[in-house]
Image 1 (cartoon, rainbow, N blue to C red):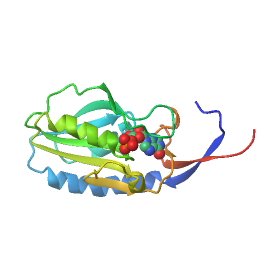
Image 2: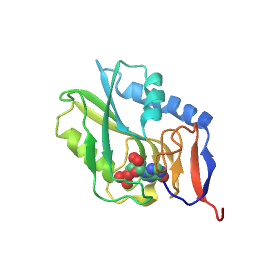
Image 3: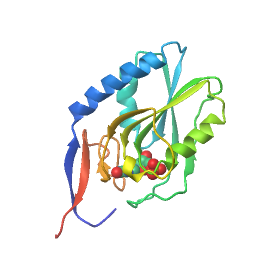
Length: 181
Ligand code: IMP
């Protein structure tokens, strides 16, 4: 945990997030309307709150699975190396899949995960990210659905952490370091 004191300024309210999820889920439900079952793959740990709200707005039969990949340690800069810490429990061959990411930053995590999952021959695989930081992009990738496009700020809340803290905030906030104490 960082010793540097910081405050969190609200950037996206819980109400705005809920409204955006409702919109996105209408589109996703339409896109997968013919599916017998959609496998919703949450990328741990940052997507756990998002995925919980998302699946409850989808008017489709869904199965939920998780994968843990990380290009982050406890630092505020992302490294290029992506490690898989936990793989899916189920098979996705021939299935309809939606990969749920909290933030697409450099894009290395999503690129790596998509590469891995596409090799398992799903019928259809699409991606959704709650937040997108296009100005930080290094890999040539864009999620199929994006909640909010944000500037290059370090954010927390709604499942997203800073050094494992603040995941339980109901809104998205921006970390601002302050002097003193
Ligand atoms: P990427 O591989 O650089 O796209 O990194 C994506 C991952 O970095 C996200 O899933 C987050 O876990 C983490 N990340 C990126 N930006 C932030 C941030 O502002 N706050 C917290 N985690 C972040």
